[in-house]
Length: 576
Image (cartoon, rainbow, N blue to C red; front, side):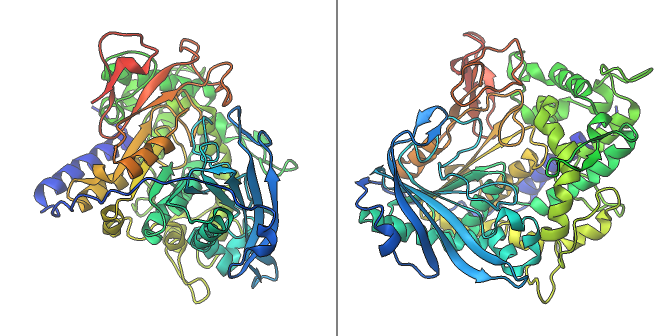
C-alpha cells in the first residue's frame, strides 16, 4: 500500500514519541502548581493627566484622552468608556539612519477588572493595531470588552521600515522579543498610575506571530504573566517561511505557464499564478476524499473531521484522491499534483535530506481560500522578504523564491555574525523549545497556558504545536495537562476561516483556570453564518446550520457524537 510522505511522517513522529516515552526514564512528576488568587477591579482615577504626569524610563506619552462608550466596537459589541493612551518607548536613531521607537497604545477601561492583557500582533508587526485584546478565531469578544487594560504595539518599527528593519540589529531584536520585555513593566506602571494599583493578574495572547510573542514570553518573561493565550504560534517562523519557499518551487512547474496575479503589496507588480497548480475545484476534490476516509471516525458524518490524528493514519493522498486519466477537470489530480501535495504536506526536505519544517495534517480546510493564499501567494510575495531581510544572518535583499537555495538558507537562519549576534531562529523562537524544561518554574507558581491552532493552517503547522506540547508533557513527567492545554480547531485555516466552527472565546476559560483552578476541557465554538455579529464566514458548507456549534476538545481528547441529539449542537458531542 502506498502512503503519502505527510502521513508517513506524522505516523513516524507519533510512533517514535511513544517508543521514546516507553524506553526512556521519564522525569518525576512535578509538584502540583500553586493556586493564584483572583483579580479585583478598580475604577479609573485619571486619564488626560497621564500625558503630563506619568514617568517611566525611555518612555514618551504622546496623548491620553477619554474614549466614550461605543466609540470602538468589537464583534458588534460597543466597548465601554475607557482612556486611550498613545506613546513611544526607546526612541533612537538606528544604525541605518532611520528613526526607531517602540510605538504603543493602551486602552484603560473606566471600570477595570484588575487584569492586564498584552495583545501580540501578527505578521512582521510594524503598526499599532487597536488595543482591543483580540483573541483569534472569528471575532466573538476581546479582552477590552471583558474589562482588561490592554496594550498593543508595533514591536519597534513602522510600516515604512518593513521589512527592512531586519537589517537594523536592534530593530530585529525588538521584533523578536525585546519590545515585549520593554513594554511589559512600563504598561504595569502606567496601569498603577491610572488606577492607583498594579494589575493583580497579567495575561498575554495573540495569534500567528502574536501567538509566537506569547510563547516566547513564557520562556523569557516567566515571572511577568500568569496566563498565556497562544494561537497558531509561529514559534519556528524562519523554518516555516523556508518551507513556504521550498513548496512554491515545487508548485511552480505545475502552474499555468505565463499566468500571473497581482502582487498583494504592490498593485503595480505581478507574481506567478501558483494557484493554477492546484485549483479551487481540485482542492475541493481533495477535501471530499479526506471526508470520505475520516468524517465518520468521530461517530458522525457531518462534514467535519474531529479525529485529526486518526485521520492521518486513515488518509493517503496517492491512494484516496481520484487520479486523472485525461485532462484536468477539477474532479481528479494528476500523479505530479499528488506527489507535490504529499511532499509539501510533509514539510519539505533539502537536497541533502535535512528536514525543513514540520509536516502538516491532512484536513478539509485545504479547500479554504486562506490555505491557497498562504501556499500560492504569500509564499511568493511575503516569505522571500522575511527570509532575506529578517531571518538570516547576515541579512541581505529579499530572496527570489524561484532561485532561492534552500540548502544554503537553512543553516543561514541559525547563523550569527559580529553585528547580528543572535540568529534569526534564536531571536524568533522560545529558548529551550526543543526540551522545554524552562517552563517548570512557570508551572510551579501557578501560571497556565492555553493553545489553539487551526488544523488546516497552511503556514504554521498544527502538528508542530502538537509536538511542542508533547515535549512539554515529557519534561513535566506526563503532567502537562495541569499547566498547558491545546485545542485544535478542525477545518480552520490560519487563525480563522475555512469550513470550521471558528468563533470561540478561550480567554474566559484561561482566566477561570488561572484564578479559580478550573481547567478547560471542552469549549464551545460556533459557525459564523449569515447575520453573525463577528462577520460571516463565506466558506461554511451549504448543508451546515448557520449557527452550528461544536466542542473544541483539549488534546488528546476528540469530540465524539453521543449517538443521539441534534447534529448541529455541541451538546450532542462529548470530548473523549
